[in-house]
Every structure is written in structure tokens, then in C-alpha cells.
Length: 141
Image 1 (tube, rainbow, N blue to C red):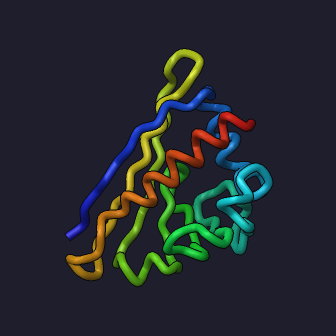
Image 2: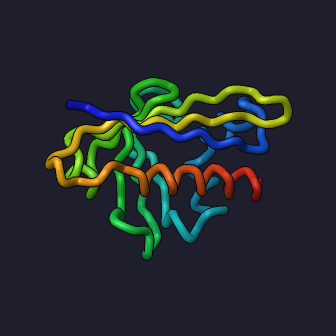
């Protein structure tokens, strides 16, 4: 049975600026967040459309994960199709929703997942990393 966790983080950005940064993340994130990402490469599609598949390689020292293959299912959804994550979760789908809040935005990050075994922990580390990345991205951009 699928479960869901969610977290909200306020970023110093308009929704349009946030989505522009997310669409530019293939080049932007490894450049400004090298402690976390070694590289992000588009292996299928144009990088901005449904059907795009990206290969994310994480920097040494990032816990539990060295790479992830991410497929864009909708403009605000992505499904992890290959990674160390798939040994823990049968499904792992992330969704971003962005709401304007004056000069900032509230980014809601949802993870829908199904564990391979009941003993597998909920993906709170992934949530923490996402919050940290969004805060760092918009503090530095």
C-alpha cells in the first residue's frame, strides 16, 4: 500500500522564478550545490517536458544514494525509475507544488512511496535534503 509524506518550505522566490530554476537545474544545481550533486545529465527528452529522463549523480558523502534516474511524468511530478532507492521502495514518486506568498513562495514537496519491506524507514532523509537544496538554491541564486 502506498504512503505519502510531505513537507513545505518557504523560499525567497516567486513561483515563476522557482520553476525557471527547476527547469535550469540540470546545469544550475551541480554548479551551485557541488557538495551534493556531481552531475545531472539529460538522457532522454529536452529537459523541460513530460517524458524527460535525467540521470542525477550525487557527490561522495551524500548518504544512502549515489545516483538516481528521474522521469518527468507531469510538469510537477517525477518518478525515480532507477537508483539505490528502488532496493528500498517499490514506487517512489515526488511532486512539487508552488504557491505564491507575496515576495516569496511556499514549495510543497510530496513523496508517494511503497516500501519493499515494512522495516524500511519512511523517506525523511529525502525530504530533509530537498528542503536544504531549495533553501541553498534560492539563498545563492
